[in-house]
Image (cartoon, rainbow over all chains, first blue to last red; front, side, top):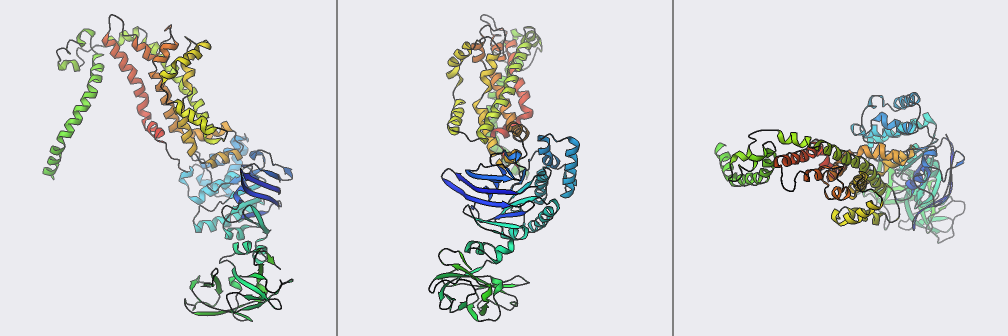
Length: 355
Length: 282
């Protein structure tokens, strides 16, 4: 088991700068999720940690040892690939044992490790099969098995669930969480799926365009985002954003609705300042001071809850969670209320949070 | 249904007859040669001018030609050729496989240019490089030595290209996964790429084998003393200046043709698969 420290890690492919000076510290045994839209550099960052790419600048330390220029095999990391990368001509047992054969692990030790991994991952009955004879979930488990037997300090998962169907994904997510609880190893997990990030992570690292936007626990990021990007990335449906202007006496007046919201921020911006009011769908209340009246464009009944959608003049659609909304219908008028304590205020130009 | 079937046969009759005629035209000379190898030398041409169907039947049947051929040392010629072709095949698989792997997996300067040169090299007719190659081999002092037959044929542009094309289709993830497990380049090539590319190995191996099997000009040039004969050169030596034992010559030709066929037939499936470039199942 080992922690990890990235110091000003930079990566360029020729003229293209992919990672811009990333600083990150991961504690021993932590489950960290790198999340961000495609092309944000999260996979590249993981490959830099694995040693499959060389850093252009900066340093990487694993377990207190600088591994910036160390061979991938000697970094004490194991990686589970998105494609699983199981060798098609080898059986499950041979796939899991490949690394041990390469590294000349004594046969009886290798057998023990294989048996233990197979037991942990319920692969005992599949050891003689070839990857082509396995289902997606089984292949995934074999790939994890290959990582486990290496007993790495750090596990790296590169979008491991993206090739599975929805149901299996939920199941594997639970299994991965259990695996982490069981092994207590440091795990780094790359995904673009914010639900995976929220459910699995001890710590989420939100990346955009090769930069870290925010680091924190899932709920910290959800409740207290640093900027518009993080606020909009986590949560489904995502946070609503209303363009607004600061009025007299720390009041935000929505640009497209005749609504004024009293602000509960420490240092409200000056009058006339353009801001964005961020508000999560589930925080709309049945009564209050700041009313929002709109016409419902679409309704989604999820059974336990209902989401009403309305189009905002010149902006993104608004989602409102209606807990008592089974009767809501498209075309109806709806009045709902803001609760100032749930308002997240962002600067209109920089997108940074105003606290 | 019957009349319709009959009509179809009738309609297809002219084309069918044409096909049979063309097939006979192609097969007949080979058949005649093969049959003649089982007949005494003096009767081979007797039934040909004027032509009689007896020329196409192995009568009177005799194995004299084959006995004579092996008495004249054709067995050792076959063994020589097997040795040369076999060694070329083994060394060629190693060298060309490794080269194809390098082109497919590594990034290095001028890779595309070098690869183009390799590809072009197999398009050059051998006659074009025979003289420069002779000079090189002579400088090395390899004239009349077996090594002169093997070494120049080991590296083969087409075989490299075959391997390169196949290895390129192998997902890079396999390579990276193996790297992370601590496997070195040769280990990755041997344990992962080669087993996945069996059809390509078989194609390339057969190709190298057949190139050597068919080689005539180079063995003639490189082995002027003719103490170590390979099969094509050996076959030619059965045709002497004044007399030709035609039945022996045909016997030699039959054996020469038969050996690659016997090798090729069971592996044909892989040969075609390899040349057509097969996909990889994940």
